Image 1 (spheres, rainbow, N blue to C red):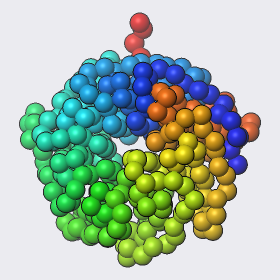
Image 2: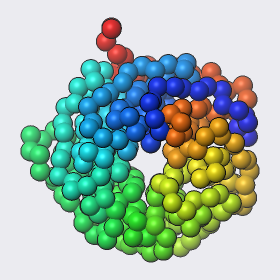
Image 3: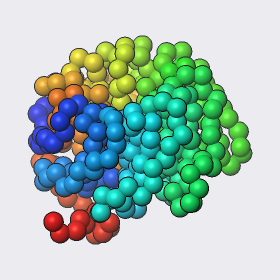
Image 4: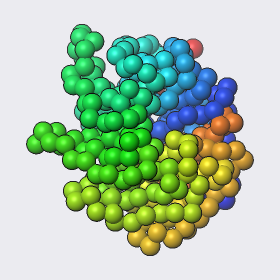
Length: 317
């Protein structure tokens, strides 16, 4: 069980935090805000490390590359940016979406950026190429793309049209599953055999990736209109979702019973789980990011992960 109160509160965004994600080792995190900025943090030490301005409107999503040297961000300004972490330079500006860009992901080798938007498309861009044309455009959705997740061989896309689309890159095939309600978030499980799906019918679903079978559903939270996020612990022992009533709910994965409810001071649409620890980050509409941990685990630092963070070592100010 997590402590009932956050161990750290990070302040730095001038407005709602729209998205937050850990980097690959979990020592740092990046956040996107309604204030048009991306921010790099050390959450365990409560440090704001760097701010990345450049977008012209609200930043809707941000993720780090698997080698932690680059960031990709998505914005309401219809662009996706590719950043150098240490210098803060914008290395590529990917244009082409006709409307708001809601989500962005790197592939597993971090040589392509995938962005999804309100124009119902996913655009796949080569970050090393000099061309600004996409490698591929996925245009099968009938409404806004709200979420993307990737594995080594597959891309899963969630849309307001109520369908999950799984693109099998090895076989060149598309598999669709109809959920019904608008989808706000999709996430592969740690074993990549199932998909966690958030929908605006107050339900969180766990769906078998191969068969489309409903494995479990999780209810008790309010989710009717906002683009809420959900996730599972690194060991898939429990699933976690934000809620439209300023709380976070945690369910047992198998039994689907609520294990814990965290009461927040303001509504949080976005959350992130640590890649190897029971650490939870929540980002609120009040501009705060809060870190929740188990008792006695608030200052645990992964020294092995710390050694691999050379790209995150910022130049002297």
